[in-house]
Length: 252
Ligand code: NAD
Image (cartoon, rainbow, N blue to C red; front, side):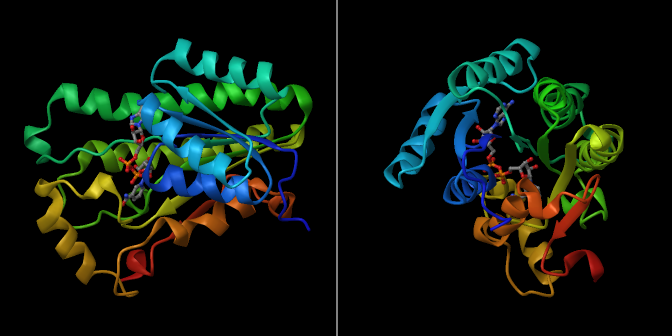
């Protein structure tokens, strides 16, 4: 079965909750060993525990993906433990909400540090291992906001950072494909996770709901088959692709 990931070694950043947690379960159920990486160790441990209850080999690692030393440490730890990294799910991301004219430099930098610098660091550290072994699958989490501007606005730094994720994915995807490393991204629409549950975002969420032809927000489970597909040999001819899963929202 070309969708199986048996004996593959995977990690998921931002794996302690939300979309990353859903990805970790999906990859593990498809047969991969999974390192759950999160800024908050307890969250990573809780998810690693859930996986182990399903018989999935897993470890929990704490890291801030925007810090080069943290990123190198998680990759080194995984390689020391399981020998390599075959599947890198670079999913950690943050979202802030302010009018563009009020967006502080601090907010801009923080958003870009996690969403884009973190992705660069992870792709580079995992990519070096993968290029060395001539095989690897990198799956970055972008967003539908990489394609459209979900209205009402107030997501300047987020939208710009996610458009950057797509271009980073396209560039690495074409640069590394002839050495066996495929780099793709997934662009979810509005997913019902903690990221969008803050009180400040609720008026926006209601507006967004009205914009979704599918008539509901996405759930983590709506994204699980996609990450397994992009992690598997079934997608070996795909690279630099942005797989959009948004219930039709970007088409309206
Ligand atoms: P979430 O806030 O529920 O979970 C994010 C996880 O990432 C948390 O466990 C958090 O601790 C961790 N994290 C945050 N900063 C980190 C850092 N610097 N280093 C390591 N881990 C860190 O968010 P989510 O909704 O699951 O989002 C996951 C990804 O999906 C993000 O990249 C987000 O931009 C993207 N996304 C989300 C939606 C949505 O509607 N929820 C839509 C499109 C894209």
